[in-house]
Length: 292
Ligand code: C2E
Ligand code: MG
Ligand code: MG
Ligand code: MG
Image (tube, protein in one colour):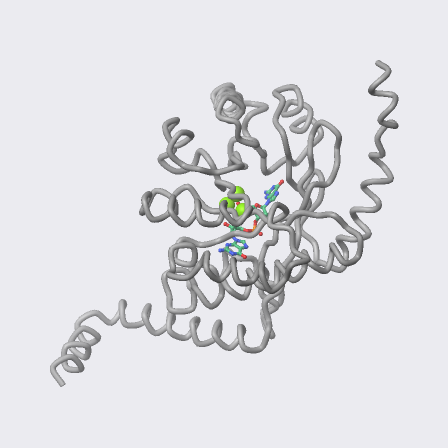
């Protein structure tokens, strides 16, 4: 056919592009197989409330247990999934597994929220909120208030109207929305007004640099101020040291997450980690606070 002929010409005239496409196709075949073989795994990184050090929840971060290459980080395979026909199926896998994990924690007496990263095409795919609505109905043990969907600023901005609509549908179900990597895109202060999100996650690049760089420190301060002013919760990611934590506490940041608290870990390790953390950060009895 003419189409086939066109494709062949295309290949013939641009051998480098051809190689690139072949590689991409190869990766996608492998990734589709990985989905079928259940080779993906969710790791969980704790999130902490700064004022009382309580563990509020954990963010699900995907890993690929590759049969030959070992454990792969998302940066090594997500770029192939995003924009491909696998994106939605992959996103559904993550969503189902993370929600099932949260239900398991609840059943084990562990009150932990779950934060789930949602890609642009997945969020904007038809039926996204409908799926969540049905899932919550089928799993009445799940508390939607303990579920946070993390979306990137760029996702929201690509199609602001559609994104806002889906965000609102999710929030009507009682689910929280977090704006991830805040500050890295073309974020402007007006998005505080126009995007109906619950949580602002300050990108880790600002946190990394804020101790040495006054401009970064000013950005962090401003985002925290604006979040408070617009009644949003603000979480700082990339908290690697106690000094970072101390500065963020003095700035009255609400929540923190980072290697300084814990690295992402397999689900099986989280239970013990939380109990250990709680025993080391046990609060004064409530009455002590009331008396003061
Ligand atoms: P993100 O959602 O912004 O997640 C935070 C990333 O920073 C994670 O990398 C985490 O391991 C890392 N991190 C956390 N604390 C620190 C710290 O103190 N220092 C440093 N240097 N890094 C820290 P990871 O797991 O490699 O994930 C990278 C990105 O991949 C995520 O960024 C997210 O955008 C994406 N991602 C991960 N899992 C999923 C998923 O299940 N679905 C989708 N759509 N995207 C995912
Ligand atoms: Mg995230
Ligand atoms: Mg982030
Ligand atoms: Mg990121």
